[in-house]
Length: 193
Image 1: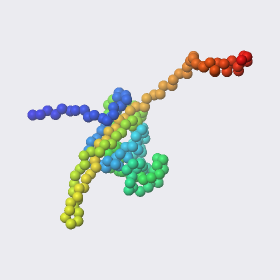
Image 2 (image 1 turned 180 degrees about the vertical axis):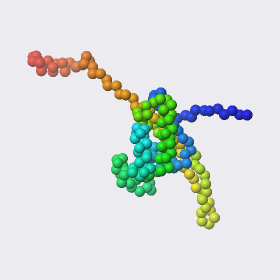
Image 3 (image 1 turned 30 degrees about the vertical axis):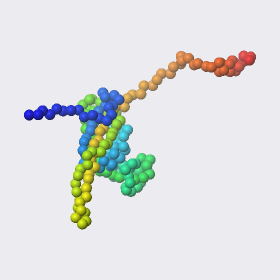
């Protein structure tokens, strides 16, 4: 009887501070790779709560996912103006639902690590193409063509925003001056040349 060993999956990028970060990933999602990539890029760098609100607005069709790279045949959306993009936009419902599930998973992973839920933001999100699903479609004159699906893998890293510590002003700092600057200062102070 063979024993199954649980192996850790490798992420494309490890977080800078693993203690203050939580990860989640999903493989072989049956949703369009191109739509998922655009949806992921739309929430990259957002805080977790604002990303979730944005995706819920997209589901209600009150906001749009701007198609910056894969928008060849999509029509222009007026809502793209909210994102400084004046081109095509869509409401990829399936991709948004999958991404909301992944964010929920990452949030619960952060909760286990006892991270501050209000302070989490999306530091890394990546979408890769998965192996194509093969089907066939029947064409005229008895021919058969491929009818492929384009699933995807997604990985997300949420991190806590680090407190920026202000550097103290150094008043006792030595300012080095050239001979020319020192000579100009002496002239200003009334010394003879």
